[in-house]
Length: 117
Length: 209
Image (cartoon, rainbow over all chains, first blue to last red; front, top):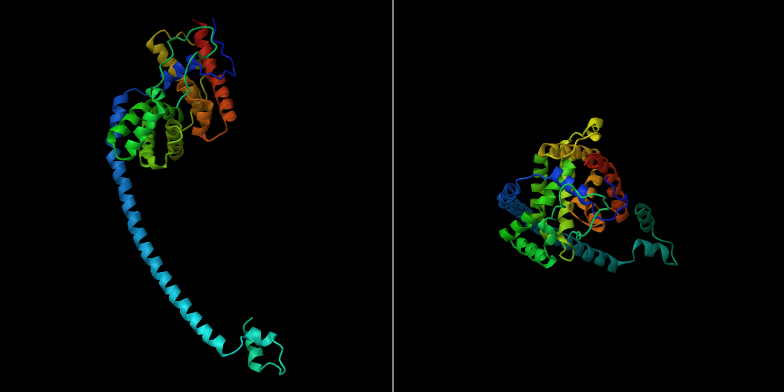
């Protein structure tokens, strides 16, 4: 009798499976399980400590982001207010250049358009 | 979950020992498994212990197939189990637990192998491949096991995992594809090539029986 499995057999090979199982069997199953379970608390503690570190940094990050947002909001609001006052006082450089006028544009406006480039 | 066994292998002779029963993991109903995972996630140590108990065998064998050295394999298996514990909240309970866990194990073993730069086993001694005696005694079985481990070590890593999960653990091609992150057709190919290599050894033993 010979061992002649089909090469494309789609089912597990019991002979090869049993031989490989014996070859790879590590033994001492209970000791391994006990060893893993003894480390469970350490693993959870490590995760907990990382969570604590990340949470601490997250709180600092949120506070910093809030301060930055407040500062940016203040500056944008202030700039808007200033821009609004200027806009109310007269046309912008682009408007002064584009709008048809009876008089030629003032020298300051032409210079300002050059400097803005 | 591993697929059910049933009549397997077109062999003309019986194996030298009856097919080994599948691990307990193979018999865990999926609902029970999900319940255990949920309890473990909630901090139930006993539930995690039950999962470890049921999957330790397959995990250790897969790790040993990748790493060769049993101590190294147990270290990798332990790391993988603890890593799985802290990643449990990432597990999707709609999917089977076994392939998810085994993917972590395969990655852990592969990473360890790369880190430690474990030497690749040398070419298989031709004297070991052919002309073996019958594995009638425990000593002879140990020799056969050693030959198989050497032959396994010569295979590409993915091929080793595929053949162990398929022929030893009874996982389906689709489940192994999930574990390895490769197409199912590639798994079939890997199993085929691994078998072709390993069966040479077995045939030499079996023909003399």
